[in-house]
Length: 390
Image (tube, rainbow, N blue to C red; front, side, top):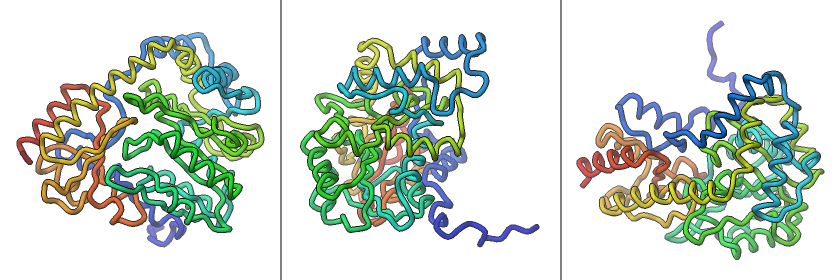
C-alpha cells in the first residue's frame, strides 16, 4: 500500500514537524553543540541510581505498578507538596503518576477540554501544549508575553476570555523564556480564573530551578485556586534523569480523577523501578535542592556572560534550564533564520521562539539557549560562537 499524505487527520497537520527535531537533526548532521534540547549532560544523584538498581534486583516494579502510581511515590509527592508549599494533598485520590510530565499534561488537556473549548496559553509556549490542545479538538488561544523582558500581560489575558474558554494553561518557571511569574502576576492570573470560573493546568516541571530571589510559588496555593488547579511536576527535571520519564499531577480529587481516566488509557503504567527511585529523591534533604539550583545558576551565569559579550541582548533568566536572547543587536531580524544558519556557521544549535508562537512576529527576534550542560561544553560553545560571530 502506498503512503498518502492525506491520511493524517487535519487537526494534527500543523504538528507534523517539531522545531526540536529539526534542530537536533541539524546538530547531528553538522557536529554542532546542541544547546537546543533541554536535557543535562550529567546524571543526577547516585542515591537515585542505587534505588532504581535495588528495585530491579529485588523484583520491585519489574511488573506493572499500580495504574495511578506506586503508593510510595504518591505518598512522597504528597509529602513534597506539604513540605515545600504547605499544600494538603491526598496521596490516595489527589495524585496521579505518568510517563513524564508530558504525558500528564496531555492527559490533563484531554480530560478537561472538550471539542471547541478554548485554552488560554501564554506564548511562546512549549510545543506539546499546542499538540495536546489539537488532540482534544480544543482551540488554542495565544496570549503573547509582553514588554522587553517578556512578562505576562494580564489585560490581554482577560481580554482573551470568551464564553468558550475552559482552561488557562500556565508554565512557571517558564519555558522557553526563563521567567518566573511573580506573586502579583500569579494573583492576577488567578483572579481571571476566579472571575470566569476557569480551570488551571499549571506546568511546574522546573519548580526547583528558580534562581536568586525569584522563588517559585504554585498558583494552587493562592486563595480559591486549589479547587480549580491541576499541578504538574517532573522527576526528570528535578533530579536530572530526563530519560526515566516519571512525572505526576496533584490536586483536588475530582480533577485528578478526570486526569486518571485519560492517563490510564495512554501508557497505562511505566517506569516501576524508577518510581521507587523518584520516591527516594523527593525525600532528599533541602541541601540537595539548594545545591542543584546553585550549580545551574553558575552555568546560567557562564553562558549569559558569554552571550552578552557577543553583543546579544540577554533577557533576565530567573529559572529553568534556558536563557533567551534578542538577536537583533547582531543584525538579525529573524531568530528562525539565525538558528538555521548557526549550526553550519558556528557549530552550535539553539531554538527560535518564533516556532513556539501562533503569531511568528511575537517571537521573531528571540532565541532560546540551554545551559544545563557541563561548563566545558558551554565554554566550547561560546568559543565557537565568538569565532563565528564575534
